[in-house]
Amino acid sequence: MVGIVACGTYIPTWRLAREIISREWGFPGAPGEKAVANFDEDSLTMAVAASLDCLNGVDRESIDGAFFASTTAPFLERGASVTMAAAADLRTDIRTSDFSDSLRAGTQALRAAADAVQSGSAGRVLVAAADTRMPPPRSQFEMLFGDAAAAVVVGSENVVAEIQGYYTMYHEISDVWRTDKDEYVKSWEDRFVIEQGFVSAFRQAVSECMKKYKCAPADFAKIVSYAPDYRWHLQIAKLLKIEPSRLQDGLFGAVGLTGCAHPLLMLAGALEEAEPGERILLISYGNGIDIFLLRVTDRIDTMKKRGGFRRALQSKKNVPDYASYAQWRGILSAEAASRRPAASPPSSSALWRERDRILRLHGVKCRSCGTVQYPPQRVCTRCRTKDDFDKVRFSDKKGKLFTYSLDYIAGTMDIPLAVCIVNFEGGGRMLCTMTDREIEEIAVDMPLEMSFRRVATVGGVPNYFWKCIPARIKE
Image (cartoon, rainbow, N blue to C red; front, side, top):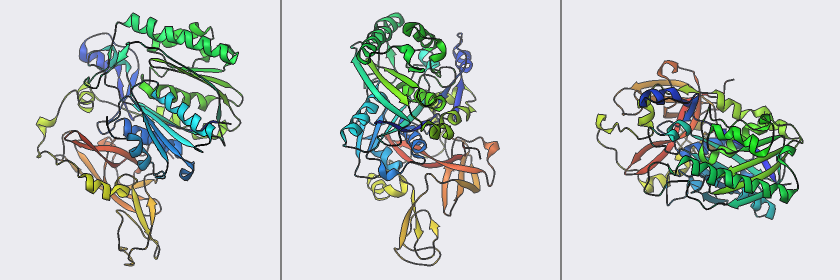
């Protein structure tokens, strides 16, 4: 039985009320809010966060592949899946692949993972889909697009949702696109995009899929389907001739349309509400259609107890104004306000030497006295034993704020910069900065988590490291 073993989600902490966009541009707005990646987040950092949520409770040594899917990968020539696998602290002898250039990239990666497990070439494969699509300012896309990531582990044992069937169809059309020279997503006229793009492909693919598997949409307890906007999400029930209650929430009011991550994000929400034996139809769109037929197993309770999707949806803070959002997305530049010389580009050789410390967030534990320390040392700071340590992963450890300082002249985007000393559970102490924080909430002993972030982009090269954030998981 091949299927989904575990699910993970990441919805950024920050939400932008759509009335702020309306007020900025002076046109009628849409209700609700959308999830917005912070200035130090991108598709890769969000994929890492979703992967860590997905791998909670999963033996990382059992993962044989890591697939990264996005239309907004940070590099055009450099594997993001490799960095994701390292930050998730996976084995180095696994298969890594990047899926890109299509809103179906997430489900295409899911299919590739299922095929690998089915063929026996991999035992378990991690699939993470994430997007931070750039909408043109003052466009309907700016109202619509949100940022998020979702991850699944595909395997053949301890499956919570069996993949019973699959159908795909490509649909050659220039409806929505972005070239390698474009900063913003572009599209053709709305009616053409909807009627000749989404609806035409949707009708044909669903009809052929139902014929292939001799079933009907009404046979499924939940339909998890991509839709180009909120209005057409409601129309899906009419297209499929089902009760609207069978449609999974499209998340347009609370998160927005999150690109290639959207189908897997909605699926995570559906699985947390599913009951054993129920069937789910997963439909993804992007120059074609991918359809998965899923059956929920008796192990679904293990996922429902985790509640990761609900927790990510409920844990949020408000972006204060449009100017903050515009700076985070690079629409407005704050470089002119900088009071420091431009930073030097990161050293690739130094990053390579320190890759376990920087990407995997490894510290060490002394085999002689048990002292845990970060960064890794050759000589124990307590008993002076030399070169006798075990590696310790800090990225999934909880911590508390030991002390901190606020730097009001350190940077232009994150003023004041919160420089923190974090004490980890089980030992270990780390110097890092805090993000996703309100200054008023910073206090000694506050619970913290670690989050993989883009700390700087110099000369067009992103540089990644870990920061602490206020704990999103409340005890």
